Length: 165
Image (cartoon, rainbow, N blue to C red; front, side, top):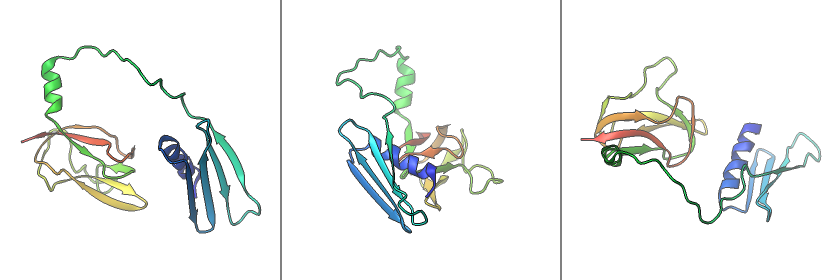
C-alpha cells in the first residue's frame, strides 16, 4: 500500500461520520480510529516488518465551523444566475482519476461547444485500475469542462456543464 493511498483514506475517514475503519490487504493491515478531539489515529502493520506498528496523529486542517455562519456574496446578474440554473451537471459516479481521452495521445472525447447525446461518452474515471466510461445522460451542448486531466474527483463532483436541448 502506498503512502498516498493511506493519506487519501485518512482524509476520507476524517471527512466522514465513520469513527473506526479497518482495511486488510495481502498481509497489510490499516486501522483508523477517530478520537474525541476529532483527530484520526492511524496504525499500520506490514508483513515484512516485525512489530511495525506506528501511531500517527493527524490534526484536522481547520477547526470545525461554528453552527451558524453568515456569508455575504456579491450580487450576481439575474440573467447569469438563471442561465446557470438551467444547465445540467454531469457528475462523477465514483471516486477516481478523471481522463478526457481514452489514451494520452488521443483527442478528448468532448470539449466546450461540442454537441452530445444521452449515450455519448464524455470522459473516463479510473478507479482501482478500472477505466469507467462516463456518459452524458442528456442531449445538449457542453458549456464548460469543470475538471482538469488527471485530477482526482469525488463521488457526485460535477465534471461538465451541459446546456440541454
